[in-house]
Amino acid sequence: MKQIAILGLSHFGKSVLDELINLNVDVFIIDKNREVIDTYKDSSAGAVVLDILNIENLQKVLPSGVDAVVIDMGDSIEASILAASYCSKLKVKMIIVKAETEAHAEILELVGATKIIFPNKEAAKRVTPLLLSDVLLNYFPISESISIVEIELPKFMIGKTVLDSELRSKYNLNLIAVRQPDTKFQQFTIDYRFKVGDIALFSGDDTSLDEFTGEIFSQKEHKTINERFREFFGTKKT
Image (cartoon, rainbow, N blue to C red; front, side):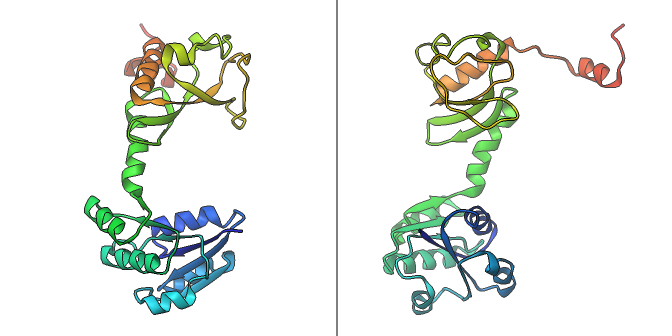
C-alpha cells in the first residue's frame, strides 16, 4: 500500500486529502494548525501538529519510505521552498508542490520538487474554453497542445458507427469512451453505432478539436435572446 504525506492543509492540500482518504493508500498529514489536524485526524492513517520548517522535526515524523509528499503551505512561498528542500534532502522520491508564480516554480525545481502544480492556472485553463464554447461539456488540457474534451455528439454523427464516422482520418481525433447522460463512460468497438444523447470523450491536438467543435457549432440550431425570452414566458412571436 502506498504511503502519501501531505504537508500543509491549505485549499489544495485539503482537496488532495479529500480525494485520497477514500482510496487504498495510507495518508499522513502534517500541519501546524491543530484545528485543521483535528478535523481530519480520524480519516487518515496519521496526523501530526508540527511546524515543519525544521528538517530534524520533519525527519522524526515523516514515515520511513514514504512514496510521495504533497506540499501546500498556503501563500507562504518561503515555507514551501524550505519544505521541498527538506523532503529532497530526506530522499523522498516524489515531491509535489503547489506554486504561486513562475519564479516560485523555478526555485522549487532547483531545490528538488519533482512536480509543480498551479491550481488556479490549471482551473482557469479548464474553465475558459467552457465559457467560450456552446459545445464543450468538459475540457481537460493534458499538455501544451493536446487536450481531452467531453462533447454531446452532434446530429450528423447519430446512426453512424465509430468506423463510419472517420474520426481519425477526417478530424484527426481519437475516441476514448462513450456514455449516455445517466450512465458511466463505456468502452466501445468500431461497430458501435452512435445514439441520440451519446456523450463522448475525444483526445486530440487543440487545432483539430477547435475545427471539430466549430463544425458542430455551425450545425446547431441557435436561438436569439428574444426567442428564448418568449419561450420562457410562454408567449408567441407576433
